[in-house]
Length: 251
Image (cartoon, rainbow, N blue to C red; front, side, top):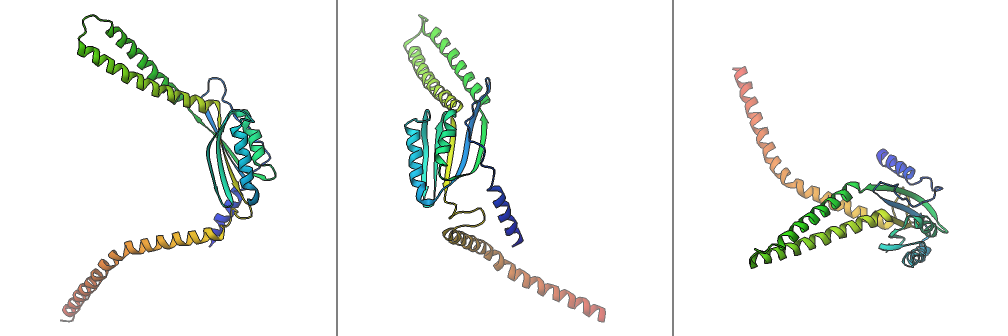
């Protein structure tokens, strides 16, 4: 009970960060290869969550605050989630729209360094380009047979496919560098707190706990069946040995 009370207290402290700071978009400095992501939690009454999510989605898809794409959208009763990729300048106004008439309960920003991945992809592209130049030189030779020409054509086709894949990777990397990923979780504060679960969640936790307990019991029964006769045999052997020892001492 003490451990549960301590855990509940710690959750309460973690769920109450300062929400006065604006959620501003981030742009890496010159020479850096940082892909920024933001995660915010907005507390809003359940009746207004669906309409607010629709408004945020419309603002994103219409590019009201700049280039924006919806990556994921989900809603379940008293909560919802919306994930978008937007230009850095649009992060703050879109977050303000999401939290209007509500409360920005928490926010988190982090970045992934893509410098190594970008350099590795560029190195592979340079290697493919150098190999393509070698193939072009070989194709100009006059002493090539028909089978050689077919092999060269097949190799160049494979090379073009690999190059297209690498160019696609480079485009996605650049997209991550030029935009910010923004995840917005909407939650009804009256239905969810850091210290308790709704009744439906309690029933879910109870069923999960019962299933786990039955699984542990089923796993342990074979060991109990094996340990019982072993214990009886050890007890019989021990009593027999002690009786013999007692008889010898008495003799």
